[in-house]
Amino acid sequence: MFSIADLEQRLAALGANAAHRQRVMRHWVQALPLTQGRRQLEHYLPHALLAALPALMAELEGLATLVESHPGADGSARLLVRLGDGQTVESVLLPRDGLCVSSQVGCAVGCQFCMTGRDGLIRQVTSAEIVAQVALARRQRAVKKVVFMGMGEPSHNLEAVMEAIEVLGTVGNIGHKNLVFSTVGDPRVFERLARGPVKPALALSLHTTKDALRRELLPRAPRLTPADIVDAGERYARETGYPIQYQWTLLDGVNDGDDELDAIVTLLKGKYGVLNMIPYNSVPELPFQRPDWDKARDIARRLHQRGVLTKLRDSAGQDVDGGCGQLRARAAQPRKRTVAIQPAR
Image (tube, rainbow, N blue to C red; front, side):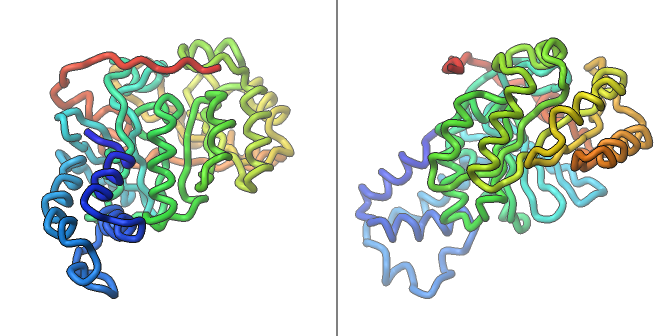
């Protein structure tokens, strides 16, 4: 396992300057043939790098390999991806050239409605492994948007995720607004994201306006209230010019009552953002239920009429065990090891 920084050091040791490193990285991240480009590699790269390149590219492809693909009727595909050490994560090819990637094997937040967090955090995914998920997907079809909404909490692997975002937003040829960092609201995110050369869009997992319920549903999330999260999101939105995507998983009978809708209006009306309501993707092992689609549509309509820009979204791959973590849970469980997480300030 190695990071993007490790890869750049290896390239430099083979005589690559900045332009050479960018060329190699671009071929890898964009899944381009080595023969493609205005200048032939043998006329451009140092001899030592040229000789090592086939083995290096094979090693990079081996960072993320496809185990299973489950195409959905909506144009999505759920991918079970094996990393170099045998651990597995999930990626999702989304309709309209999107890709959802994982930033951790497992997750420490322990959201009660999510399969990924049931076994806790197993290990971090390196920046190179994150980028490798994109390269793997691009060998199958175009990827123009990457969302960090797969397995794991990106803020708990912050530097690796930001390193991957920088690569994807430069040599990866993905627009900065099309890189979406999703988090439960770690305070470090609001400080760190705006400082990087690539400033991603931000998605904040809200799920409820009630502080006590949020602590119950997201037991190990940072102790920010929903109002604190929205205030921090609003500052980031105004600083970057990107509207915040507030994520709300609709759980039947849990967070879909009239009291929640009234509080949503109070919390989000006039804010620079959009509320994405996603009916829960039911999992037999968990007690939560997916609300009726007509009920969900009525909730979104009522919020929109009251001044909150609301989009009702269906989780991709409903017909192929779509909930994050399900493919991995159904595969053989690899050996675990514990990884410490830096506590939020």
